Amino acid sequence: MTAPAPTPAGPPGSAAGDGPIVLTRLRWFQLDQVLAIEADLFGDERWTPAMFWNELANGHHYVAATTPSGEIVGYAGLAVVRPEAWINNVAVRRDRQRSGIARLLLDELLAVARQQGATHTLLEVAVDNAPAQALYARYGFEVVGVRRGYYQPSNTDALVMRRDEPRA
Image 1 (cartoon, rainbow, N blue to C red):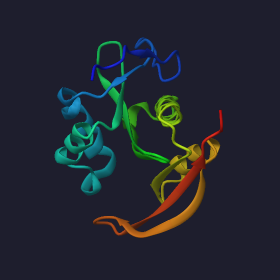
Image 2 (tube, rainbow, N blue to C red):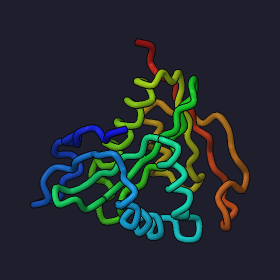
Image 3 (cartoon, rainbow, N blue to C red):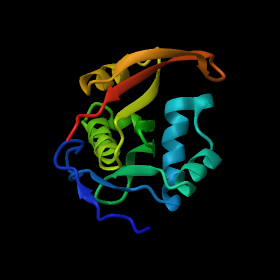
């Protein structure tokens, strides 16, 4: 499978002097940058390299948000097993948060979910991650359950959120 051409993401997510953020398919050789972001944001609960390799090897849709110089500032992943789509990751480098990058990534994942025939999209989010919950709610996600002790080793609960995809 060949990677699609980069998608210019427009001015959202741009920092002064950086130029527009571009979304591209995440490639194996970018995992070092992804793992650095993952470690900073999630600490002991971060995904391992093997987890990311497995996602890529299984053909799940992962995208990187990059600066024009190729620096990764965010990433997101989606697995579609019709009729469901599951958002596995949405992460933005700490110094680039609140700049629209998460919205660009989420827009991309939801578009792919629709294109691949998903009727609904689900995700898990930590109960103590109010900013992410608010973002997902703006996209029409609603809490449908709780996974007790989902995030380890902190034993933090996860909210399961669901959004029904609009019919064409």
